[in-house]
Image 1 (spheres, one colour):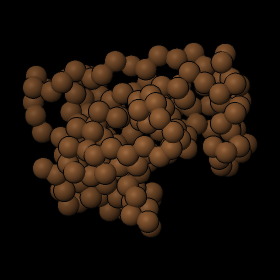
Image 2 (cartoon, helix red, strand yellow):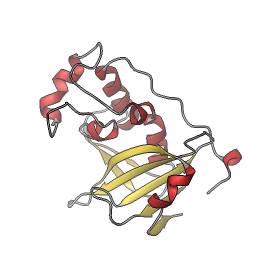
Image 3 (spheres, one colour):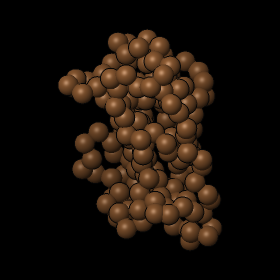
Image 4 (tube, helix red, strand yellow):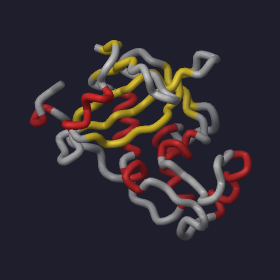
Length: 172
């Protein structure tokens, strides 16, 4: 890993005041403002495919009392919720750092195949010049079809990085 002074500054936080606005940021950042699916190639050569329902995972969107959300059922409600968040809850830490998550997927410093994760098997890591969370970890899952999709991303303290970088180093 690079020293902190060599690391780039963390991209600015995403600012939003409604679930519709947050979803709009996700579509702009992760899907280049386009319809499903959106594909891009990471610096490590990994082709990553993003669908609109990955929004749920990337911001940990939930409705209390409901086990699963499906975009086909939620999209119209999300798009119509221009003020506030209605019945939705989300992880503000993940949501604020959507730019960092995407930058980590596009330009990782390193990628590990980390075994023992429930829904992912690759961890993309990027170091930023920011404290207390100097790193971002972005987890990628490989579906039966071979598609590589985002599962979750979050800022990480350097002291907590060890558990994410165990396993085979795939890049560089």
